[in-house]
View: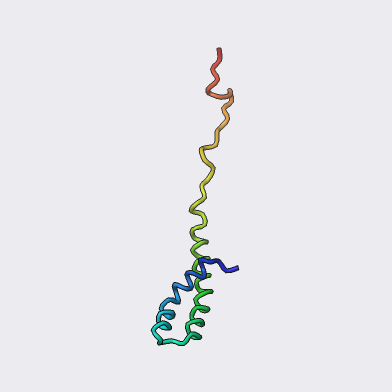
Length: 79
C-alpha cells in the first residue's frame, strides 16, 4: 500500500509539470507520466528518511541498573 505522504511528496515533485499543464504548455499524458515517475522516487526517498530517523524517538532503559551490595541495601541500618 502506498502511503499518503509518498503521494503528496510525488505531487509536490511533479508540481512544475502540473503548472505547465495549467498554462497549456504540456499535455495531460506528459503530466501523468512525470507523476508516475515521481511516485517510486518519492517512495525510495521517504523510506530512506524513515530508516535514518527510526532510532531518534527511542530511548534506552530509564535510570541506571541497580548493583546489589553484599550486605543488603544501604538504606537498611543495623540496630
